Length: 200
Ligand code: SIN
Ligand code: MN
Image (cartoon, rainbow, N blue to C red; front, top):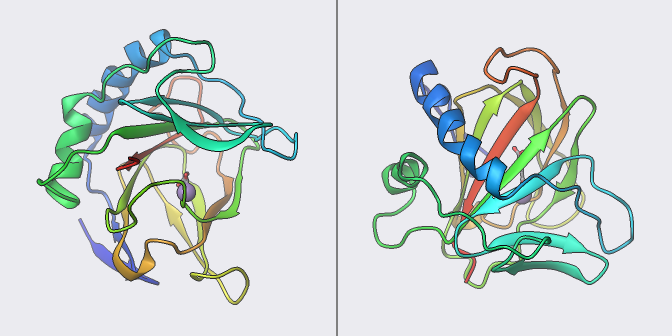
């Protein structure tokens, strides 16, 4: 379980063993049933290639009206609560003072990616964002706290956890590509990324 620091991001390689990863997939199953993945649309009108949903009091959504957190799924129902095994990871690596109010669930199918961006829709940047990788490998790119400049990339594997906080809280990051089919965790392949956020 190596701990790496890359541009201020703390990368916990293999934080979750295979049993813990399988347990997370089990607790995510009912969430995906009651709050199904949807295809988000950016304010520009372009669709994102990931599909997403959330758990927690607030979920992150985007559509033509913009990026925001809201208490309902786009179809109108409330988000399911964040399961304890996921909160345990936050309490171990991020904080025991306050739990996250959003667990954003991104699903990367074949060809999905995420452009370089900052996570900046939260009210208070003193809380970190914690990212959990499950399933296929992803090439994760880390930039700077402002747009442009050199970047560095690292492959994230299933079970890796990244803490994006402190001076790196607003560092640009994204996923260039996944290696579809590289993991057997998800029966149909692909990658799930969970990000835990204190949004409000
Ligand atoms: C994100 O930045 O929201 C997702 C990062 C990832 O998929 O690893
Ligand atoms: Mn992000």
